[in-house]
Image (cartoon, rainbow, N blue to C red):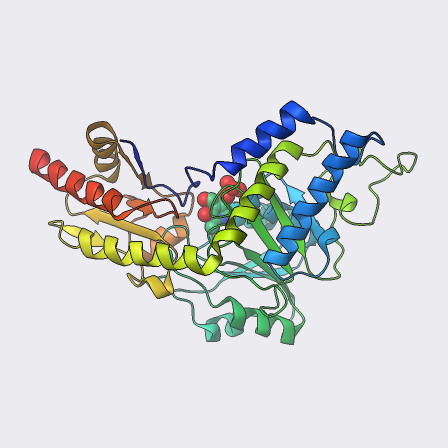
Length: 383
Ligand SMILES: Cc1ncc(COP(=O)(O)O)c(C=O)c1O
């Protein structure tokens, strides 16, 4: 039996309804969205709009038209940061960012002349709101924070940062890659102006889907220009949503798969999903602590974290452990820096990396048992 424990990278398996919906659309419809007046195209358009509505409901956003589809959270974050920031703008960000934010900011710093302040965090990945306050300057245009670290799992104080940003009139952009679909997100109560999400992680949808919820009145310059299916004689990108930020034929099959995943999430309930993942995390932390020489990082507390557990085994190389688990035990985990070197600096693993398990809704205790037995066999063979 193959055991998949890399759900922080992408969730697997998906609910069966997801591939079924994609298959049904490709085989029985196949029409494009927003570009035809025949019945099938209108049906496809309706399904895309329905997905915007489901996402708006999930995030408590009141206007589905400003739920913009992208190919990934990486594109959504680039769209927001590149589309808003101007030379001389200042950005406040966390010490835990994925390269989807960090490389985008560094490129804008080099090429456009923006300024970046990084808010410090503890080795457990915890951020103190006082440090966010201290980082703000009169030029601060955006605060961009990951909702939960993909390296340490730590959930960030999004609501407090949102309230602060609103009070100071600063835009608040949240990277919800690790939380959307497992932790409740309310863009209104949490004062999130721009929410970037990806479809293929805890939302349980297919790769190639993602989006940006625009919950504010800010001018975002489109990343790309092109056909939108309407107003075609107008020579620029229309200024109304969602067309303003969506150009080219949409990933309708992916969006329809995402819609089926959102229906699944709704029928299971976020609370059920979160409590199953929390219980598995507690079980895993306990079980992993019996492995000789294990070094566990992060908060090691399911109430403060998503289902991500980073670890090393003293004197051993993370890649070799992950390779052994895969080849000998059919257990798939991640090793390395997970595209987020800043978080590794906090725990002193930026040169070595860590192993990481990412718990998903379809994991069971038996999967954790197989991991822990695998680690013990690895030690038997390699000590
Ligand atoms: C916190 C965080 N942000 C951004 C990303 C990038 O996601 P994607 O590759 O779907 O754009 C990831 C993926 O691992 C992530 O964990």
